[in-house]
Image (tube, rainbow, N blue to C red; front, side, top):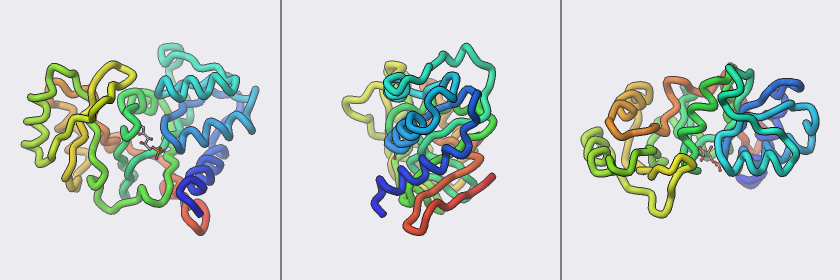
Length: 220
Ligand code: 5RP
């Protein structure tokens, strides 16, 4: 099974969590794109509205006929479905490889359940091999980089990328993240940091992972 087949398989498995008649939170990335496409095939007319975590996902949802509403129009929803760049046994994740981490953290925070959909390459024992994305305010780049170096990482500005919120991203290499909850708090406390790509204080509730043997479920 190719990596893309695994992504499509978990996107399909996530459809079981979709509740017809309810607002749905939708993530960003190639796995989330499979989910959106399958949603269009199987749930057209049965999801009253979606809350989206990026302009790219909003466009894709609208092309398939889904209504996309502003976050300010809802208090909460049952389900948020999104991919991840890495996840570990506690279901904490690194996200933001697609630069949508800030909206992903906000949109997922209003969901009762975060359903994470990933191919098998995303499973790790200790996170950090994937460079940790950190969205920052541009004027703070130098100061934030220094603080991230003090925390043991090697910060690299992501060239040519600006987020939906108009901010740059620093990717932090060389981290061995043994306490993701603490590190998420430490990074988000640095002045000039908008969002750290660690999703640990609020991890996934369920991870659906594609394997050659089928979809493996963690959590829930
Ligand atoms: C975007 C993300 C994505 O969920 C993450 O990068 C995984 O992407 P993909 O599904 O393409 O492997 O966090 O900001």
